[in-house]
Length: 164
Image 1: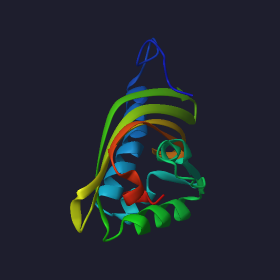
Image 2 (image 1 turned 60 degrees about the vertical axis):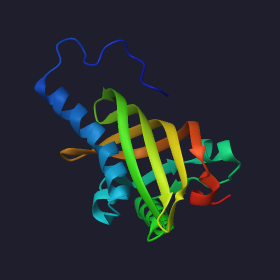
Image 3 (image 1 turned 120 degrees about the vertical axis):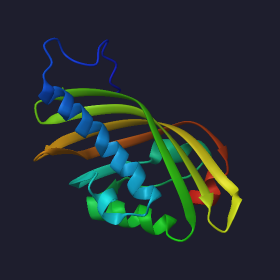
């Protein structure tokens, strides 16, 4: 479900609303930068313990069949191990839209992800993806409970980066 409200803040929004919105978007920043820096703790901080990451809509664009990843530890291990010493990444997050309902939130964003083989940067995949994210409050921060990544377009060879 994409966030398509006609305004960023509810009427009568408060400083707490702005703080929550900043923390919600920060979860996606932690997701991207954690991968880019191969920082396990930063990457893990983006997810709830029982998180789900669904990359199937994106992978299906180039014919890959991947399972839904379930659980923070499995997501972190799978993604960081897949890229370790093999793929250089950069993620750019833009157009975030947020909806909050008490301790649950939804985030829609566009993420451009550049992936290059470390040994040969001429082998690459540039992905423009739409993210549909459900988050939950974890004390003073927000974490991803479910993330669905849909590819809008790509250039290069995603199969070389992610596998067939």
